[in-house]
View 1 (cartoon, rainbow, N blue to C red):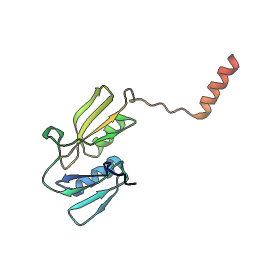
View 2: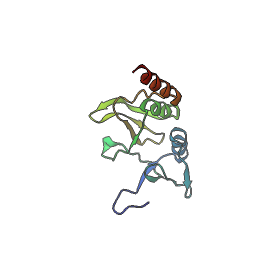
View 3: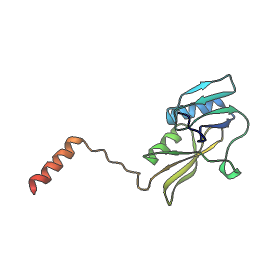
View 4: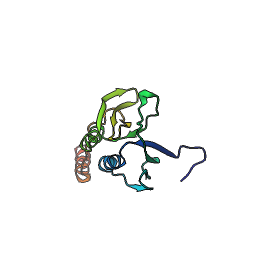
Length: 141
């Protein structure tokens, strides 16, 4: 839904649209709609946007805005980015609100990923196991 005076769309340059699309498809499962040979749009990824053919690249160190992804499991997302040929430009570091890292996609654009503190290990417990533990605790009382 479009909201009045709220961020709605972002555009990034891309030196190699095919490589950029392949990276985001592999790392994050994105899908693209091509509008000619010089533009590819994405939607339903938290913020809609697109990549346009250009020799430029976006880096926060050069004054560009930094788009930051959220991850529930930071190390898992980092591994997916590496496997999709992304380059980790700043290893995981802590900041007052959590942890994050920065990466460069194949066309040279910088992005970051953040997570809350202490989210490197998330335990998945079977509901039946939880019921047994709770039942055992009640019986012991």
